Length: 266
Figure 1: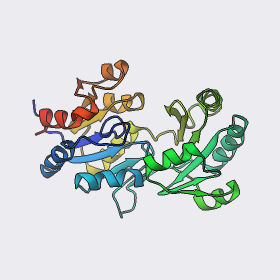
Figure 2: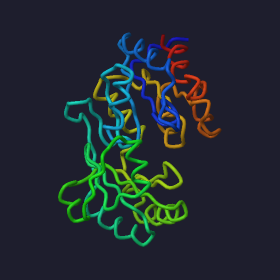
Figure 3: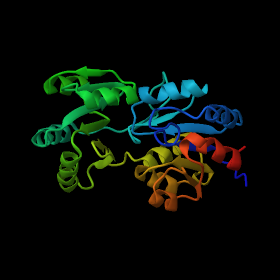
């Protein structure tokens, strides 16, 4: 049944593109048809803006991105309509503690990515995020980055898990801390969740929550799926994520996004 949704918020990795960063060929065509009907199709991800804009280009659309897991919302070439940042005092203490666990820190500020050391994990992240890392001593990063939008810690899964426990205990309620991969730990402002970003964009556009569809595949999408009027989980999503959704579509590379859009919007 078509419900008259005015805003669709779609996750990227595992939803719009697969582990090889490839989109199903038919997805772009369906998304363009949805946009042609006047529906806003926004990408929402932990990625930086630059790692999202090229996907809009691939689909031939000019739409909003909700980047860094919800801490910045903008269109290409325009000022952010919403932005949240991390206090540098938190960044400094987290960085000092993370060194005890042998983790490598990446600092995202706007469209810039700053790192203290370029290693193999940073190179992989560079390919995914499409951001060129700027390698600098931490003191220089502080000067250049200001209050950043997101921190990303890379390291061995056991070390990441141990650091996550410490950070969650020390900054409970003060920061949003979550693992997006076993060897990735993301730190964002406390209100910077996908649900928060989705609702901030809807508020900016004057769209009622009853007019929002959300599509995702992983645990950090659950709040968005539950908070939207209609949540769609990918067929490749974990069972707990599927249970949080109103509908389970086909897997990513079987055009699960396109299938859901055709079924409920077109």
